[in-house]
Image 1 (cartoon, rainbow, N blue to C red):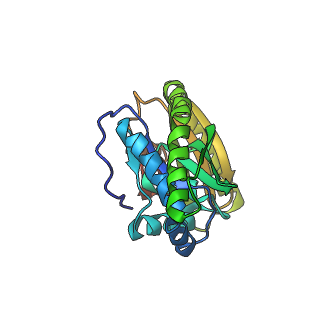
Image 2 (image 1 turned 180 degrees about the vertical axis):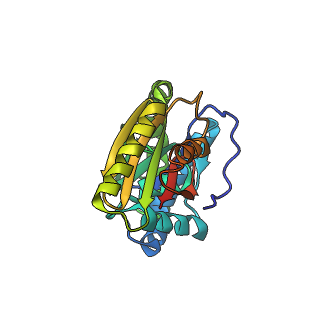
Image 3 (image 1 turned 60 degrees about the horizontal axis):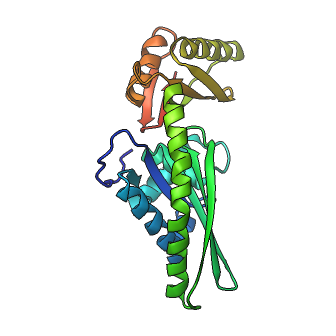
Length: 263
């Protein structure tokens, strides 16, 4: 899975951030309709401008390729309908994603921003702001959306920085989804689940089990950045550790997601 070109990053220690509207979707048509909304585009532009000026790398959900990646991610890992923002952050390799929503009442635009950690979808902080539209035209309302978003971002950035500095000490987080492919009986499935859990707990600071079924093992691991520099190194550890027990095949790796098959 490829990612789109991103803005030049001057601060390699800062998190990569994706900005998307607060919305659920089942397909590309809904995403494309949301992107065509001028207020959403204005809010996205304001937030992205704020972030790039402060040397964050910003991922984009623009273009057909990005839409295809998110939909494919939904098909690969989602047991049920998933939040677009969460899937997009995994597909495009963001550390943090920001969801926004904008509403207008009596000429006042209210914007709400919420930041989440990508691998776990944990809420890091929220911020709201408002701005008065100078008129009722689409352009005047869009400009008020831009102003409100710009006012909300400094407060949200403080919360993001607080999380980033604290959480990096606890370990970099990765979502690991293992698909069991083959005719395994119930006992064999349980043995594999036990072996995987024990293997992960030996190497990672923390292991959080999200879902375990006869076909899927879905966990989040917290890795010491001194031992595991990226997702590929996490995958290699799992592959080596399970050698001789099951065959492990890489299906897809992004910055925060490791999707593999065991058979």
